[in-house]
Image (cartoon, rainbow, N blue to C red; front, side):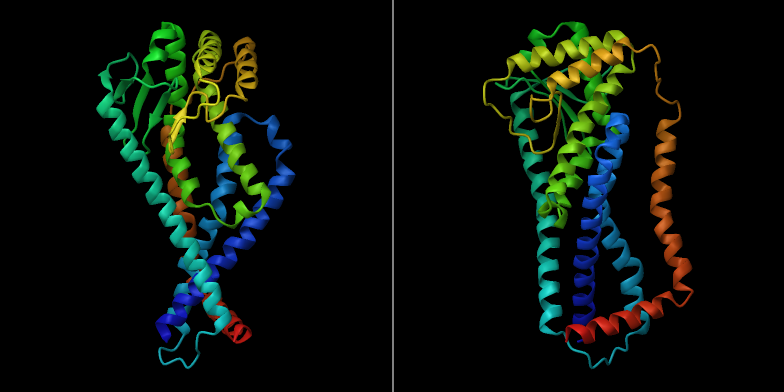
Length: 334
């Protein structure tokens, strides 16, 4: 009973923390949606992604660093407490959500790998200047130019795109895909698909997903436009050319891919207008020389922070207080 009670408490806590954090993020998004429109696309993409993944991340940190250590440290192994029906229902619902998230992640990976292998079989390897990842020319009815894969990315370009775009437009389009690579958007897209939680029940959850996708595309446009104003105009021209090649009502099959046009074409006029504005703006924002090192240090900090907090709190009475709260919850649900 000791192990079963602990597992049920952990699962119920995951569901509870995730739900409340999701509702909090949904409320915050309603307040931040309009003010964020004045920020850069890269900033919007980072903020919306953080808001989208923070509920499950907070739930995992809370359970892994606090609830489980508290239970192991203070719950007697010969406990007489039993798993009530209410606690069991919460645990089952939570286990179903975790299983669904794992299935989403695995299914996304499997479908992407299968599709990439099929594309590689049909494609021809090509070499393009300035492209460091494997690049393939593929016969495809949709004007695809996409980076496929989160860990081992490959660039696929439809033959129609190669035949239609001029050299400058193609370079600009590839620079856009370089923005997706630099931001690791394919990995982020995979995480978003895997961690769809209670937030998706709320309309703001779907709005956050759309907001991140739009911001990620615009951020990749800004990344390409940082080269010079010619690149910005050439990318705008490439967007228009590719939009004209899209068959009416056609949608490509690509679960995890970074498309030049995204998944829809309705946002093309706004992106073209933004690129023209970037081309006519005198102030340039060159890429930071140490941006990669800064990014690594930031990630290490976010990983180390909860560990440090957990170590500090484990030496105080926090774990004991948390265990007392768990005892009250078990009695309340009995």
